[in-house]
Image 1 (cartoon, one colour):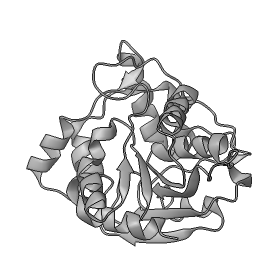
Image 2 (tube, rainbow, N blue to C red; image 1 turned 120 degrees about the vertical axis):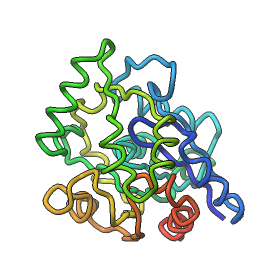
Image 3 (tube, rainbow, N blue to C red; image 1 turned 135 degrees about the vertical axis):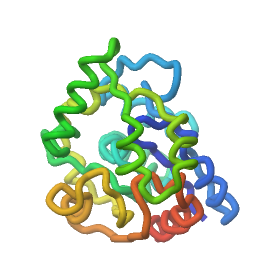
Length: 248
């Protein structure tokens, strides 16, 4: 049995994973879903990428989790890459912290890039505009984008109910440039889990696979039907694919 740590994407908090966790636990696994610093409702949004990363490191260390399968969804992919840099090595008298990384329709940045360097120009313009118009350098995802691009594989009722769980996203972590030289030297096994109807990044030139996935070098490839927010539209199916992506 495995221990999974599931790191959410933008506009989410850890509660987005609850239905997935429930199914993983019925299969005998342990699963945890921390909330990244600056994410969730009614919290301080003044965070940078390093602080976001540190919050997940602190969570893993405080719970003394070892031999974990660490999964990052979307923006969470940038977090788990930096977490892996920090805690990838074994520590005295203990097992290794991370057994495998899973990137779920996740951003995998080249060394020196930011997340916004990896999205289409029209999305960059929109995000800049939303952040400038806010009073705390955050951006809230418009519902029509959520409906058509993020949760395009669910009915309107689920799209509306899940949208109420979202909260404004800190913008600074999107634009921070990341030093990833160490990440690309790590020998941790990696998987890319690809949902084939995900339209958040336009299919083709800007798409998740193979553009992002192939940056991993050697990796296990697992795919399933579904959109970007499959943890809402098909949590049981996602949990089963996470088990496949995370197996030894």
